[in-house]
Structures are given as C-alpha cells and as structure tokens.
Image (cartoon, rainbow, N blue to C red):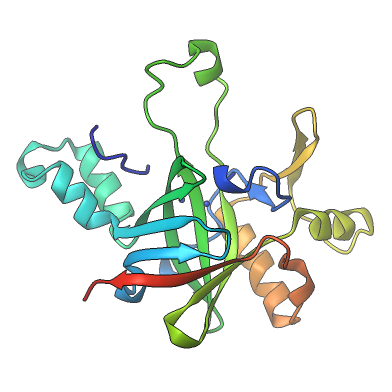
Length: 220
C-alpha cells in the first residue's frame, strides 16, 4: 500500500527508552474517543515532526470505493479503528508510522500507540517472522498554546512494583534485555490504569521520555 496504514505506540522513536509495552491494547472500546484537536502537523521537543491524520481519512483515501470493494474482514478493521489516528513520525531522517487511539479514565486522557511495520521488501525474511507489534500507553496533557504532552508508562517503575509485590498483573520478560511485556487482557490493563489513576500514582509516568508537541498547522 502506498500509504502506510497502521493496523497504535514498542515505539521505534523511543528505542533507547524504557517505557512499558503490552501485547494487548490498554483501552476498552467504551472508553475511546475522537477529537479533531489532534489533527495536523506538529513538531516536538526532540526536533522530530509529527503528521497526525484520522484513520478514516487515510483509509478512505487508500480505498475510495471501500464500501463496495472491501471484504468483510477489511470492513471490520475499518469499524474497529474508525476513531483512531495515523501518526507519521520523523526523527533525524528516520520515519515510523503508528496507530494511536485516545481513551479516557475518570476524565483523564490517555493514548495507546502501536507501530505499523510496512512491507519489508528489502529486509531479511527471517527477521520479518520475528517482528511483533506491541502496544504502549501515554498519559496525555493539554498545555497552553495548544501544545500536547505525552508521558509514557515507565517500565522501571512498574518493575519495582512487581518486585515489591505491590502490583500483580500478567507479564513476561522477553528478549536478551529481559524487557517486561504485559500479557494481560485489555480489560485487565484498563483496570490496572484505572486503579493507579484513582490512587494518583503520578510517579509511574516517565518524565525523561516525555514528548511535547507544538502545532505547525491544524485542520478544522
């Protein structure tokens, strides 16, 4: 596909970071929302650029006759992600594309990210078979001057809670670095976030990897 549609947030532009990842989305359908305030072109505090489009606009551009030509499975994907965003991120000349879904917990805003891996036409086929798209979650804050800040869930803080047995949630340690990957269901992940938000546990959200977006253009 010419347009790299995401089918997200780990996030390729944060490979050196230690944010928490999950096999399942962090949101439940009834908590999701869509706001046009996030559409447009942005720059961030790490000199990266972001182009945020609605999933619907990207999908319909790619498939202008989708109501007639898509299979039942493709229409199901459309319905599942019709409130999502496609994020095209560029940092130091490196491009990555993500699917992001906004959702709320007790009136607070969060974003689930998952990366989209385009077709690896020139990549090692064995490598392709080992790639899995995981989810990450960021707390979203609206700042003055229409800026937006993302703070990702900090893996090291969650690991401390697991070691101290202050948190019980299904997880595995994966890869040579033994990264923690949550294996709980989306319902369990949402309940976990809900519990910590109710306890006002601000420390679980990383500060070193926070991203602040400043708008370049916006769309009505």
